[in-house]
Length: 76
Image (tube, rainbow, N blue to C red; front, side, top):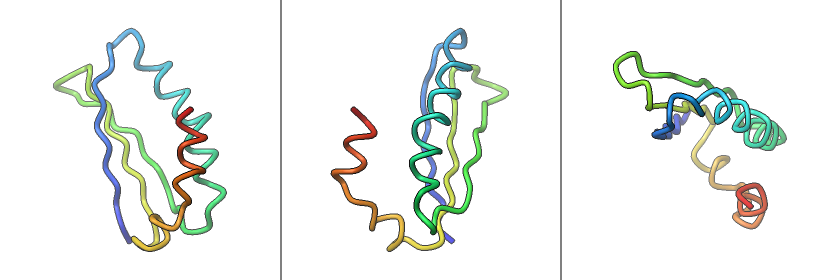
């Protein structure tokens, strides 16, 4: 299994909205790929502006097989 870790700094008053939008956009899009296993959201207890996303993939090859053009359309 491969674990992707993404850290973001988000103003505490925007944190819940950030997490909601991330789930609505990225989690739904990534779930279309069969080797996407799971995602977790961690909020730091020490730094309320820090949000960490843990994304689990079956293999590095499967993660990297997602077309960049597709990822770009999600970002836009």
